[in-house]
Image (cartoon, rainbow over all chains, first blue to last red):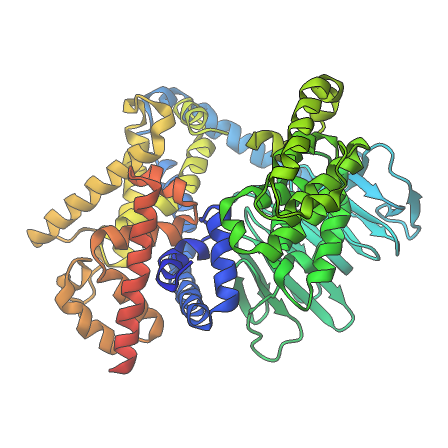
Length: 442
Length: 186
């Protein structure tokens, strides 16, 4: 991709609006071209400035709904015709509710006090043991989560050195706890992080998930963030969308991919993070446990794949992709198949090597066409994958596919196609086990 | 909950449903008003006015799922009314203080932009440059940063293609960078 082409795509790249292929192309170009990288940084700076400049207006926009409703409720405004007859009763009902609410707050009886501790969230899944501290007690009880565990307001939840878990509250906000993490649930959408690391996800822009630490309140309407707290301070990384960090020094707005550290001097500034996915890789086992069709995991596999060319970290990224196993396979397969990847032969061969090692039987019909790939290394990896999955070579060992003489391979290629035609029904049930992402693409 | 359900509930007298509709569409309507009218306070007043008019006339909305575009249409007309009233020297909402000239309130008043830029700090300089963009680019920039939606969301709102949204945003950002760099060099 040429510089002028990349620069014309930078705006959409910044907004995460490019298709997967173009996004990878731009990423790769930027990793090589200092000129375009400088352009991208300039654009990112402008983006942050615009965010900041227009933040005030957005804040005041939040007051408009209240103001509109206040005016609607005044008798001078004509309400919609169908609601006219209901105004009087509604006022009476509102007064009655207000009276009851005041009575409840001022004179709560023993029963109502007990009821105030309602279930606010559920531990949906865990790996390893999770401990729960019931409200008003100091004891931590062990829970091996087989069925979902209900969490009342005021309950503490903590994980051990080898356990992780996911908690979802009644509003759909999700908080994943890393190992050695302790949180308490005050109410729906109100979580206190005492220590450890959490990954938080608010499902919609209207979601009101607040995670409190000693000095911060962190929110991200419709987005997700990672928050880690230890005795030295806290660190937040905006993973998706915008994240807001409120402290006594004011409000920091973090763009996707920014981090904020505490302590960070008088005025800590958000800093871009090299690889947010890598920082939060501890969550991958939980995502894998969720099963097929997991877009979060697919996105994470893509981000690791993009960075496979990083000379310092490529081994670690490769290991993590291998750990994801079959869940990473559709992303790897897509990359190997797209024409633009041929411009990055090393990257493509590595993706194919991992794919051949991790994919399961659904990938057999996808591997056979790759035996005819122009790159002999790809052919050899495809043959190795087929041998692993079927125990067959059709008379040609994987290394023999490395010959530049395609004519000598053609007969075996035809044999694989014939074999598949004859055995497709044997594998029918296994084909349905393909990750949903792959089935969707098909 | 979808817009059509909320409109039904609002028509049945549930004010909270209308409040949800306002919360859902306020950024988009405000972006439209700010595109038409430079003064932030006036744009906010007009946004509020659009939702109030919407509430009064909710029973006339035929397709309840089209609440958003419908209320944006009301906002557009409210802005036009305001601009007309400004031309006839009648400025509603009482936004003018003694030292403000009515011309400063018009988003399309390019001549006054340079004077303002000289006097403002960086944030206001940037906002002034946004105001000085051609209307199509200004609209897409304001909508993108207020609404914080995807290109598809913006395309639906503006009734244009996703590629057009991309092209306008790209042009707007390039123009802003150029103008700001020019201002710094000067």
